Length: 225
Image 1 (spheres, one colour):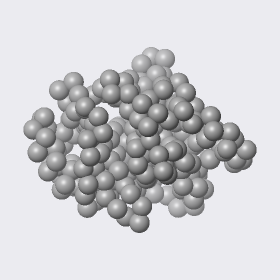
Image 2 (cartoon, helix red, strand yellow):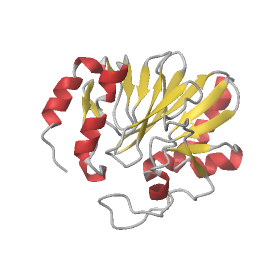
Image 3 (tube, one colour):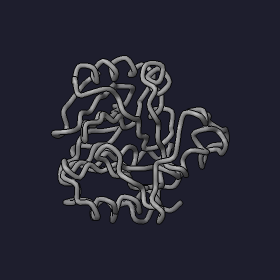
Image 4 (cartoon, helix red, strand yellow):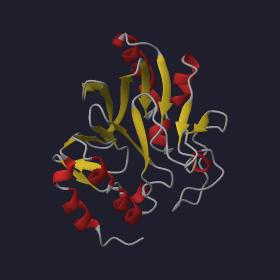
């Protein structure tokens, strides 16, 4: 597994599985947050790396969404570290097997109901920050997909909102994306936040994404459901 320091507070851990699979460790506010949990074989290395950092024990797991390649290491990690696991409330019934993901016929119980809890919201429904990360609902790839923004480092952990190629944003994988038109609409978060870096699960770092987000939206703007 490859480890890369993305910014002052963020590390990327990745493994190759026909395509790259990235997860992230964020150390901020005296807390250690894991964003996404990859595949099961990543669990031991994730825990070893957290120990090697010597920044404290794992505080929580935040999920961009509930597809199997983003939750695989949760079960073995929880055997060692009993920490809360969060996902968007809209995503939870899909990942716990109450509803089938759009475009899929079979239910997927990728986690059990007692494991995952909804991301905290204020009285107006805005998602609250955790461990220096602010969640933003970015549906399309899945109904409750979330991207996490680290404002201090100006890094957006975008999960499967995008893939990337040659340093530019590309659309998420079509066969696994529930609503491509909605995913493209959600990409406008780049114009709102203006991050210096975008990290994606399946791909590599994109620098200054605002420079070409209009091109990305225009190119994919005619995609229909």
